Image 1 (tube, rainbow, N blue to C red):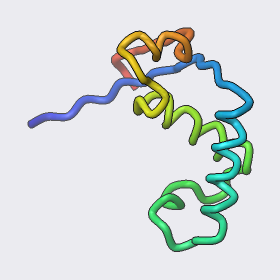
Image 2: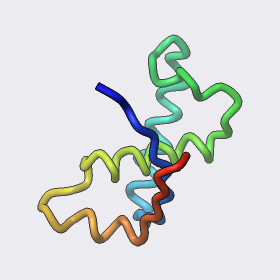
Image 3: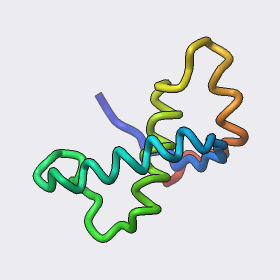
Length: 83
């Protein structure tokens, strides 16, 4: 199977509660430096880690209770086939 690369930019919205949850998650991960969470995250700021966690949860469907829920968070998506 051949894999392809697509570069995608998302514009998302999030609540204060989602931000707090992600911040708490990142702070908890700091207590466990050997976890897989840290692979590829060397040198990133706390703010970058929090934003990545929020985006991951939105795009993975953690906040989607129904099929139309994602549209509340994903405002815009731009993609290109050449990355």
